[in-house]
Length: 274
Image (tube, rainbow, N blue to C red):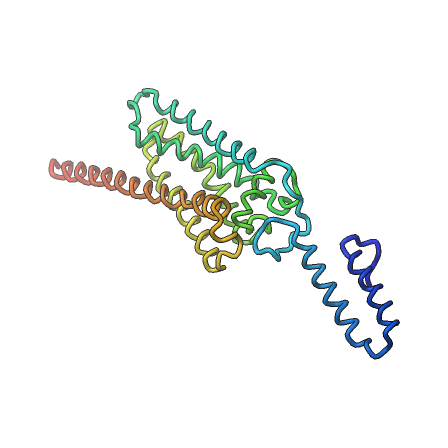
């Protein structure tokens, strides 16, 4: 039964009345097609009414969705500005000469990377891990950020199970660990490259699964080929967590191998003396 108090069904209700009135005028012999046509109209109208969002696939149902009142430029300026502040502050701090000397350019860039990761994992992804279930209808700034990003990957706006689990681990593990790595390098802790290796392996593993699961879904959650939503949001902003961690894994491997080789030589010399 179609109720007048449901605004989304008002066009269908009016059409039903017209069809039944027409049916009575032309006679009982045509009663067979009337219910079928009405059912078809209801399905088509309901489907059209359900697509009130910019996400893919287009038939995705997000009943609580509320459109952003912040523009894409506002959201991106915030994200890159705050990330830039973290990067600049860390760059300036690492440029100071400490008790162990000044860090080289490459090492300073690596520490800056961990500082930015700490912000993105801990704050941005931390927000998602806590409020993923209300983001579609929430108008908080970080929720709007996620709704904007979801144009490139709608798994975030529908609280996809893998995405929620992956982002929760990233936020609560790699976020704090990234800030710990910054501290470890600034204070020259002996375990600093162990942290670098652990964090980078975790980031690489998460990013590979992120891309691979979407590949198996046929890239259904984004407008394939779109220059901003697919190539910039989905591909570029995530491939960084493959390229950079992979580079840092190789670096940590070399540093730890060198340290182990030195320890082995020292141990060998001590054995010969004894």
